[in-house]
Length: 267
Image (cartoon, rainbow, N blue to C red; front, side):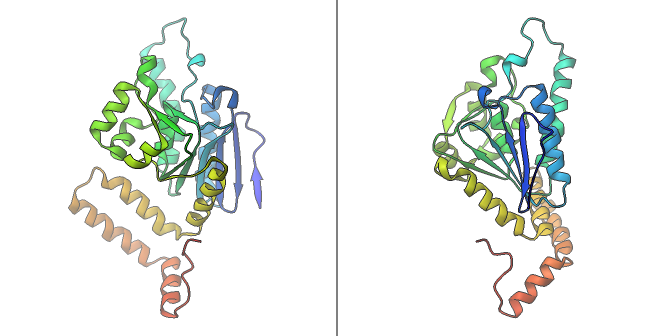
């Protein structure tokens, strides 16, 4: 069964086979995010996280581009914005950012064309990034006198290392999908014609994974970036204790004992 929400103007939101798709749909602006799009993105992200029928999330963009970042045309160039107004503008965007990054559910970014500025930051919120050969990634903030956002100050260095992250942010250099694959922030590069099908196939496999074990693993891995070895051993023990009690574990152990194929094997 597939469902969609016609309420949104700039986001196409649909759910099918346990996978929510959040598609930015302003192709004439390369899916740049203005205030209205930001509000809809917040809403769609919260729907996907809250819906018990959703077990995995795909973020993508319409028209051959992922997201050009914040819509500079929507930023008032005629009147100087106050620092407090700027902070509030960003804090309002944090609703969707936090919902996706902190979700129990796996998130996949399917990237074609440009992922610039906040668009690059959004891709880095995902647990996996699938890109086409035409994908281009750029921390373009310095070109417009701004600071990296959408969580990029946290996620980029953890993906590629501090010095590479600084270089990308300072220079606003564009990198291609192959470089992203080599550096580790892209998981796979696939032909553009296969992007959506491949990303959704991965999402459907993730949707069939044991949900408690996957959520515990995701949160533990995110925590591991700033925790000690001893702390992570405690996290492992606590998480494993919970996983041992799950129906998924008992069913999988029964399958193993009976020499039946694993119900959680990817196809």
